[in-house]
Image (cartoon, rainbow, N blue to C red):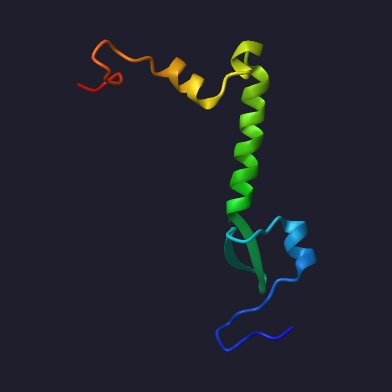
Length: 92
């Protein structure tokens, strides 16, 4: 493997997959005993979406059946009922 003039190198796909490095993943580099170590420090866009979907599924399972059947408009109406003057809570 060759390092480019800009100091870039391609991490082989099998290693990226094994380490969970996705496009947009944040990484850090360190030098330990003469070896360059690459660590994942943040989630990429796809990781965040996967985490959010998993969290949403977990919350959805914990809800009562009637609430699970509500669409987003019904949920917003439930969470933010209109005041007499039509303003949302906290607004004048």
